[in-house]
Image (cartoon, rainbow, N blue to C red; front, side):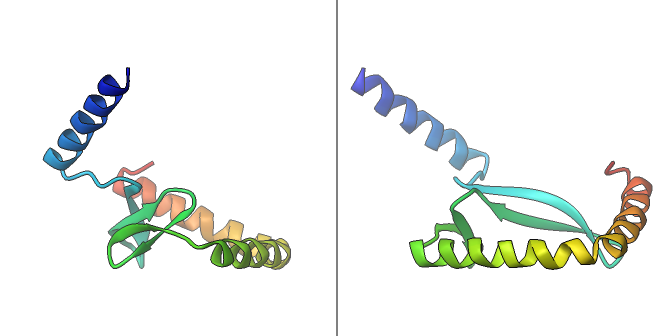
Length: 99
C-alpha cells in the first residue's frame, strides 16, 4: 500500500508539472480598475510570496486572525457602501462575461 501511495504521489506531481500547476496555488480572474486581471491565491494556511505559495508561521496566523476579527467589526459599519460597490462590480463582471 505504501508503494502504491508513493507512486500515486509521483504521478500527481508529474501531471502537475506537465500542466504548470503549482501545489497550493490557484488562478482567479478579477476586475481591477475596470480591467480583467489574473490574480493568484494560496490555500488556507499559506500565503503568496514571490509568486509561490509558502506556509505561514504560527505568529502570523494568530495576528491575521486577530486582525480579521477587528476588520469584521469595522466592515459592519461600512456595509452599505460595500454593497453599492459590489453591485457596480457585478455589473462590470457581467459585461466581461465572468458572471
